[in-house]
Length: 298
Image (cartoon, rainbow, N blue to C red; front, side):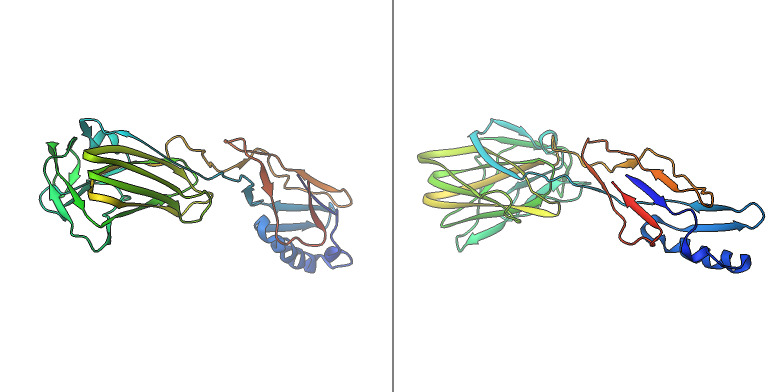
């Protein structure tokens, strides 16, 4: 990428020195995206000095591929929510059916669930996993707690932030003599929705459901719905979030060249621009408006 200019812009030609200073200073200031410029005209030496501080906008052309996958397996007998929920965690049903505990001193990302349907929310105290935490609110510390909530003829909905970096949401969900359906979707539709079921039609079951996801753009959300298909009830106990783990980074690019800030009359001005990007992504240099005597070429 090269910035180049004629040695003497037309605006300077046939001008008196005292007017040249004023008019060329205004011309330099028209560089817009290239920043401000102060210019001095030396009438004795006929050297034009351009004090240019170039701020060329750098933009990445990286396209992020969205992804969404769901997997499950039997839940472990014990879960340390503080250790597992590096970005956030949540637990439901500690004291009442509406009890909601979560990770303290972080921006809340999991949030409380929304009830789907008209079923009655109830609390249970015999979960197949024991949950512990030491960084919670409103209850600061709990050890080996086996509570949770369950519902019939309805379900639960959770919404968490989604962006271009890969994140993982893990749910501890199950039911009693039932089949439950999990549906995960990204708000921008950049990856197909995923639907799967978990079940045990004869007994109590508790699964660890892992949802790995990333969106095509930042500022999106992931919505997960867990609803009863058939049977007695479905349960929700805890959730943990590891946000941005292992995803592609998007560090800003920077200039590696030093701007050429002086030009001599009747000698073509040229400034080769070089850049670097920490992630190895392509870099695009743009200028929305340039004066007629200045060009930006690739």
